[in-house]
Image 1: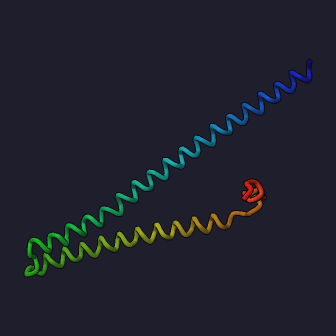
Image 2: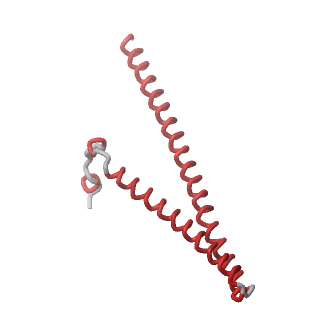
Image 3: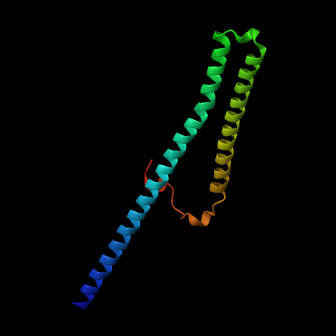
Length: 125
């Protein structure tokens, strides 16, 4: 009787521990997904703002005929140039972050991953 009680208690402890671990993993994944969504939303806004400003400045140059007013035209061209530099900088930051993340992913030690048989051994051709 004592062995059965001990085995039942051990099974309950293992099940509870597994459930707690599962809940913690799900909550972490949810947090990571939220951070990713926030990043995408912020980057979309940051990338669209310089593009919109540049389009507006170019549209003003084309429709309002500022060609004869050199000072105003140069201000709009300077604004376009600044916004395009800002946009280019943002794109460079994103690319460098992606490269750094890829390097970090590749530098993970392979011993952390269990050696598993390929699907060819599991699923017959």
